[in-house]
Image (cartoon, rainbow, N blue to C red; front, side, top):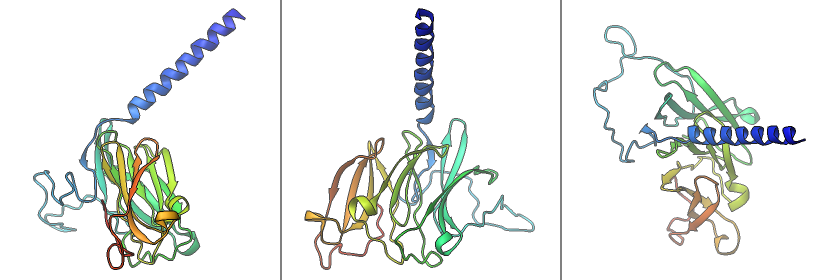
Length: 242
């Protein structure tokens, strides 16, 4: 029994060490084009020697690869210690079979690393007319955050393992519209911020454009704000990214 107990303790210790190592590996500072508006969310980049225009074929062609993916979502790129990763949201299929899809690609070759699909629900979004959201990479940890058009707020690691998810529709009464109205997630310190039009209960019963802040590690709600009253201020028309 003593030998068996010692082995159990050893195995348990090894498991804890493996978990700790995985946690360290999963979180690492990254740089790159981490949000839809660039490094500083100002529509600029510090990258140099970029092509002035895209030449698709013939002399001077500089097109490296293409991806046929509807959705108009802006790709983001993170530079990780084990290689660069490009993340982009689009959609596959149509009608009841449509899936909003998060893809992870090698930005140099276009090779697909993994993909995650999320079904639309209780929504009348016209996908072939409007853009959907874009992912955001946390520069401190490399984790990826995004919100689907029906309002699933999701965090995954760089390898596509889901960390947590919140149904904004079920938890906070988020509304959907034919044109999507899904802004991107903003990372600020230990918080992630999203903008949503909600109609819930109590003081949040009236449909208004609101900001929600969640702990980026746990997904726990930290605060929400209704910055204006309507009509006409911030009542029901917002595509905003905080």
